[in-house]
Length: 155
Image (cartoon, rainbow, N blue to C red; front, side, top):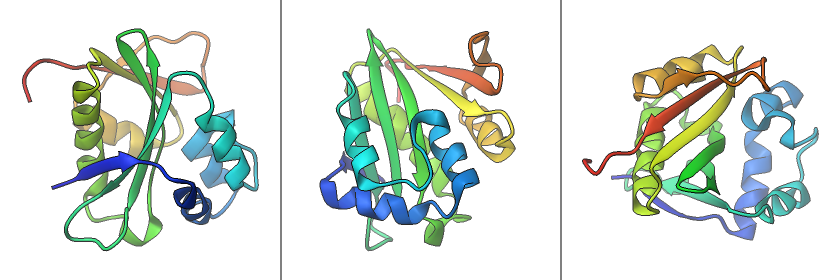
């Protein structure tokens, strides 16, 4: 079972290590971080109004293996900066992390989760589609695929 917990200062140093190059950083954070990422950049992001950052872990792995953040926008939230520790990629944890995001959003009383993923990041776009996210129009960000997931009262 996946559990989530708020990010700590020590987690930021780990996140920096999960991003190997500028291209990977752009897929992870879009234009919100610049290469090379630093703990300070993550700390500045954490100060944004409405933003909450989360780490994901489970019983099968010793350390937290995933990260995401949610920025509240009324009763909706924007999902951002989703990443899995490179040591654990390819194990189906992307689906587990997406389910954890939806459960966290439900627990926070959010009615819809929105995201914008770099359109060239086809694996992420496909993963969000499989999880039930639907594409929506966002004319302000043409290089991103905007998607939304309505949160219901059902699990």
